Amino acid sequence: MHLNFLLGAMVMATAATAQTVVGKAYGFATGVTGGGSAKAVTPTSASELAKLLADDVPRTIVINKTWDFTGSKATGSGCDRKSCSAKNGGQLYLGNVAVSSIKYDKAGLEPLIVGSNKSIIGSGAGVLNGKGLQIKKNAKNVIIQGFEIRNVNPGIVWGGDAIDLKGGNDGVWIDHMKISLVGRMFIVTHYDGSRVTVSNSEFDGQTTTSASCNGDHYWTMMFYGKGDRVTLDRNYYHDVSGRAPKLGQDGTTGTFQATNNYFKNMQGHAFDIYSGATALIEGNVFETVKNPFTSSSNKGTVYNVPDSAAASACSSALGRACEVNKASGSGTLLSLKTTSALSTLAKSKSFLVKPVAASQVSSIISSSVGPKRLKARSIRGRWVRY
Image (tube, rainbow, N blue to C red; front, side):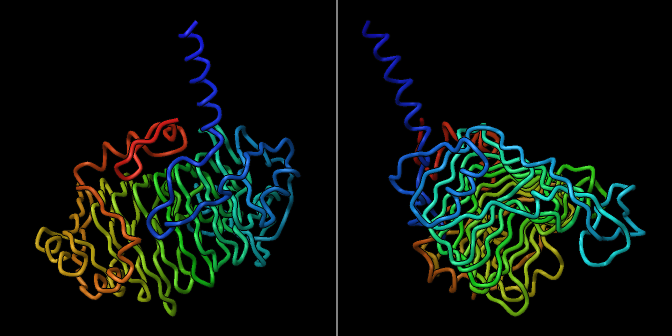
């Protein structure tokens, strides 16, 4: 009897806890609470889902099944390329250059709009199929955790983004997600700066329609909002070929920390850093990555900890040593040691992540990344279980 009671209590506790955010936001998203203590709601129709997401009322919204938005076909003007054409594994380009007629799913161009104070959570089984999320301009305090976004017009550039931040988004935590098969960007920020952490997520670029015609998705991440502050921590990037990630843009400024990410099987480039970006890149692993950094990444204000001496040099600015990045079977790991990057990042010390050594990254990624590994995982040293 006591055993049955305990088992019943455990099941009830699991069900209850599964309706809440796991862990606390950290990095540049520190302080983000999303829907806070709002009672979890599981929408029963697509219209209800859209309505719950769009306002600014604190809400916890559960994605516990596959929402399939595909099947609403449309035709529009666009073009193909002579080199890397669609029939050779490339992508079509949807736009106003009417070279050919392109068929696509309308849902990909009609994302779900997200307002302020939202926790959008999954139990590891939730999927948005064919439609992404768009965090509206100036919406803030948003948590996106524990489900998949996939199949957003993957064969068509401009066919839709997975997560699109429209700008001025103060406090967004994207955690334990999986994103794959998207026409354009997995994650993109725009215009006015946003404060964001992307953590513990998988970005799967395997595709039969690649802009680079090599089976790797090209449009991975782009952060070019004016004044963006972004943490990229413990993410798994694989089979992507470009903008993985793109940090900054000429004419804008942004502050970035990238820690303990795992880049694997990439036939193009990982970091593409622009002149307006200030970045600290430490404790990351590059395995079979053609170009860990683009050759032009030295235009940014970048400290990428190429050796032990550079690691020790962090102490004066940050009060700790940095972690060296590690590359194997990859192209040249550029030596970027602009110390003014450390001075700038030191001004945001309370938001900075303290990474582990690169030698630990592979095991961490294999045990903790993605929605299916959300139920038991370490959040920067604290074990949290349902």
